[in-house]
Structure formats: C-alpha cells, structure tokens
Image (cartoon, rainbow, N blue to C red; front, side, top):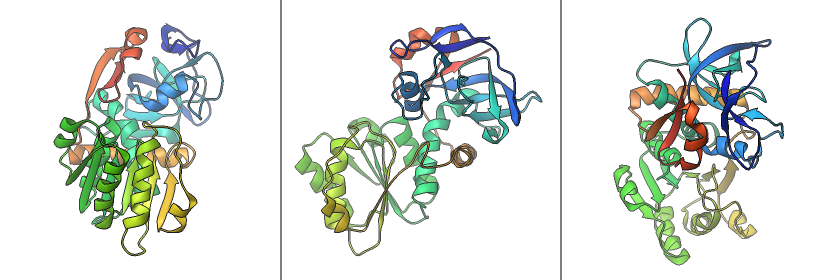
Length: 315
C-alpha cells in the first residue's frame, strides 16, 4: 500500500510503498480517507516527541478519518507502531475508534480532532471545568487555542480571556478579554495581574516558556481568596522550560498539571475526542485547514502552518 513513510528522522515523510497491515486481535482494518498534520505528528516524525518509540521506518500520523470494513465512517487514533494514519490502511484497536456524526466532512473532522482532543481533555478531563467559570487560553491564536476558546464558550464559561501575538486573530475570536503578548515581561505581568485579580479559574496553556513565568507569578500574587486556579500545561510553543520559584506554588492556590499522552490514558483521550467532535456539530466549531493529496506529502510537509492545518486526503 501507499503511505507517508519516515525512513530518516532528519528528512520527514516520503510517499512510498509499505507492507499492508492485517488486523490483529481486537483491531479492525480502517480504510483511511483523511489525516492531518499536528504538533504531535511532526514531533514523532522528527523523533523529538516523548511518545516516539525509536522504530524505523514507520508511517507518519496518529489519527484520521476513515471507514470500517462494514462501511461505518469513524475517527480513529493511535495505530500501533510502525503503522500510522497517513496510509491507505491502518490497523486500529476497536477501543480507539469513534463513530462520526453527519455535519462534519472528512477533512474538517481530521483537522479538528487532534487540537480539539487537547482542548477538551485539558478543559474537562484535567481541569474539571464547570459552567460559569472563567477560562484563560494562553496561546489562543493557534488552531488548538482557537478551538479551546470555542469549547470554553460552548461549555458555558462565564468569561473567556485569550492571549496571543496576532492582534487580528485575537480580535476575531470573540473572547471577553484579550491580552497581546508582544510587550515586555513587566507589561505582560501587569496585564495578567489585572485579570488574575478578578479570578481566573482555569488556564489552558499552549505556550509555556517566558510567557508562563509572568502569568504564574501574577496568579500567585493577585488571585483572590483560596479558590484554586487549575493551570493545565498543554503545549510549549514559547519554550520548553521555565524558571519557577518554589514560593510561587507555596504562596498561592495554584494547581499545576499537564495534559497529553501519558497524563491521560489513551481511552480517555479517544473518549474526549469523540465528545468534542459531537459538540463540534452542535457548537458549529470551525478550524482553518487546507487539503492536499497524500501523494504530495514530501512537498507539503515543510510548508505546514499550524494556524492552517494541512489535511492529507486519500482516494
């Protein structure tokens, strides 16, 4: 079969032949129709994501949209190594498949699934978000952040605060408050402090790095009372590491946690994605994406922009 195959971690995937898999116990063979690039997919393709198992060659992609042997349209995730979702066929555990409702086409569902998974899992599974709470989405101008804003609003947030570096995208999100992240650390600290003083219940952080540092310090200093702020670390677009004085956590009711593969079991992530995709129809969620034939994977891969997801289509 044809697939996007990683032979060399430094070169990215190429369109090549790969042995067609057979379904094992408690698996079904999915005929793939659409699969999107995501940060996880790119990280695994370069060998830099913590979930990469070191096996070469392997097929790129962790999730997609396809059809079961019985003809049911599904979203699926996490084919076992060395198989991936960017291929004509993928062997997928039965528990990693979710039926897709009408209302989302293949490409939109594939584009939305991974960032929507991260947003739903962080908000609901990890933070335990409740309607009426205030949510700050740190890094809201990327596709995952934009979905997190839509999800928070759909789930009943009282107030949504969005941060990012792109002023025009921030203005288009419909958030109650926005913070432009182009200022220096002192300016950001002041902006975060003003919002913290009015009570932030949940932070979904896609940035980390030098943006998280003033945010955490502002939360520690200005959060009123003792109601915990649930801070969920999801991505590291601003940097992998931070400097965090221990006093920040000792002196404040901050619950700091992560959300991703490992902090949640795979069945939980699959379930979260299914709920998000169903909500996407009712909530009319949108995500910017473009479609490319899988045969053009080598040319399209380096051009991918996470603000406009690349979705590979198969016949």
